[in-house]
Every structure is written in structure tokens, then in C-alpha cells.
Image (cartoon, rainbow, N blue to C red; front, top):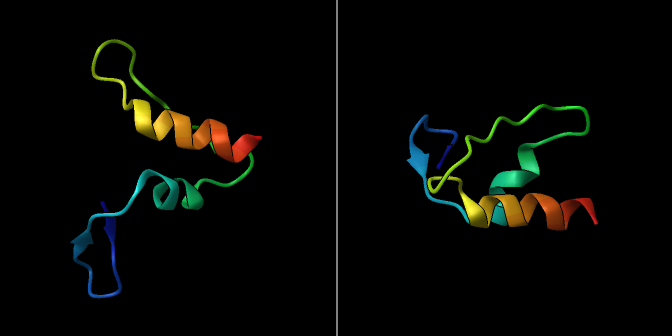
Length: 48
């Protein structure tokens, strides 16, 4: 979820969420079965 202009949260897709990640940003992803697979795929796809 991302905050909108009214300071409320709204649901977005993984592709929309990774648009806020900029080159040089660090993203911590915990390991294990709770890792957000769809979000990781979106990050990898964006790199290609």
C-alpha cells in the first residue's frame, strides 16, 4: 500500500510499488517463506 495525497493508504500492484525505488536505494527483504515473491519479481523485471 502507498499513501495517497490525502494521507490515506491505497492498494497498488507490485509493478506500481517498485516505481518508487530509485537507483542506489537499498531494499531489505527478509528471507524465508514470508518473502514477497511478487514484489521481488517486479524488482527483477524492472532491472532488465
